[in-house]
Image (cartoon, one colour):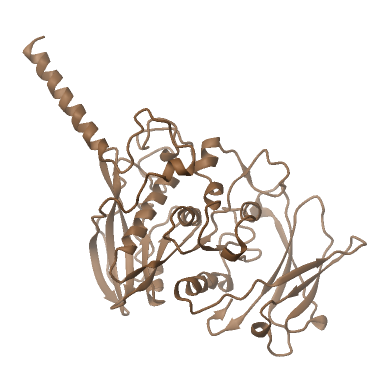
Length: 449
């Protein structure tokens, strides 16, 4: 062997050792020939979101309307030898102590919302809005401009829309490419997993802030943020309460022929075991409010009805706006705030779910619906009926959910009393699912619920 070749061999050994040492300090160790995770226990079991320093820093700070406002950045972790960091808005009432905290997770194609964090802070919370998508920050009503550092996923790309990776690892397969963690098909290649990990680090950020009560943390998000909220709340016990909006309904498979009306999809066994909402929902331990309209395109209410059916009644409530798609009426949107008020502050109690009985007509013609309030004292008022509405929804399993028809029935005022009322609905169609619902408007010091 010549001196030249020996020198090249030495340098190559040094480079390989350096690369190996870098990966040895990764937040998620390389597989190195070990089997890929195939359950949530294997996927998350060894990961501790508190184990590594956050290296948190404030990039911008100001005050407005009695609120301390900051743009912050913290380290998500090190992946493939390269650091990843995330930016967000952090707001809290100036001088506040022992505050309940909220983590806001934006939807697809969106960005961290200053206005969301500011509103939460004005309602008495410390609030962190994460910019996981890597898009330009939404400064909203902020009194300062910000054009500083943004989220940097390092060797990965969990942005949305994706900024570097041509492959879509939210909707796409778990196969590897230049921007995935593992070189083989693996659930750790899914961006859903990577963003939930970043959000778990966000919980660590919140619990380490001196003004935050770490025992009172909630999380909420819309659309893709709704799915991320559901998964985060189900896998991390630090979440005490959650409100997923238009996300987290779970998967129904194409071969589940006994479930008409649902939106069905193809899932590999690995996706169903580690990425779908279904295995996460089985681990629910916090109180959760389903906030989604009947006609939402992103998460089917029929899927939720199947996948949420086994969740404990004492932890779950539903706020469902009829006829709407991917948005809410004001009366339904406010339930998110009230849910947090109940479980993080204890100053409010949500009204009980109204009762509903469908009275089937033996002539198979017109049905009657009997609705009633379970909170008699709260619903009782003047002799006129409390505001209410019944809905009879017809689902067509051959059409997209957003195209389904929902028919509103008319309440029958002459037979109505303050806490009980009757309404009629049209002829049912037995070849499709029929959904009957009742909506009761409660008025109080907090507004409608």
